[in-house]
Image (cartoon, rainbow, N blue to C red):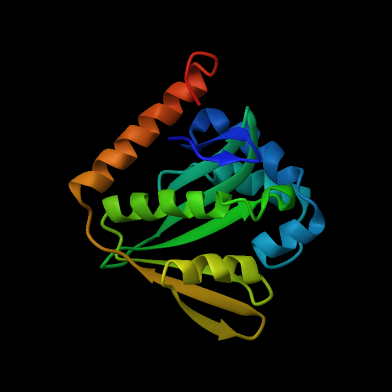
Length: 188
């Protein structure tokens, strides 16, 4: 069943290369406080364009939260190279007007399933020390949080994949792709 936020259907789906322009637009429309929270500092439009264009590289799996055709949240899962057991970093961003509606939880669930199915043993999430929403989200999933000067890092350990997690990812990715191709024909 598709999650409902504010009585509007929302699609949480994997992002594809064809979403690149949508990603660039999403990041460049962020206000400065949101940019600072996501990137732990001030970033320029040029940085955001380059960053957004590189999200869908081979070592990254990304998911978007869409209200209709508009992207309002994103989750990124990036493999950390040359680690064994495999490790990854996760990053999340939900536009301020769409926060506190369960979108971060839905995105994190998709990232956790994708991680588990790729035999990733642990995920780390880095954020500013003042980003209480991100820390709360991590704690809800039993993360261990370490605090340093100005930042916090959450670590999540993951179980091995199961037939159900493999099926869930295959089903939701296929459904999301079909919703992207045939938005008027797919039930929300």
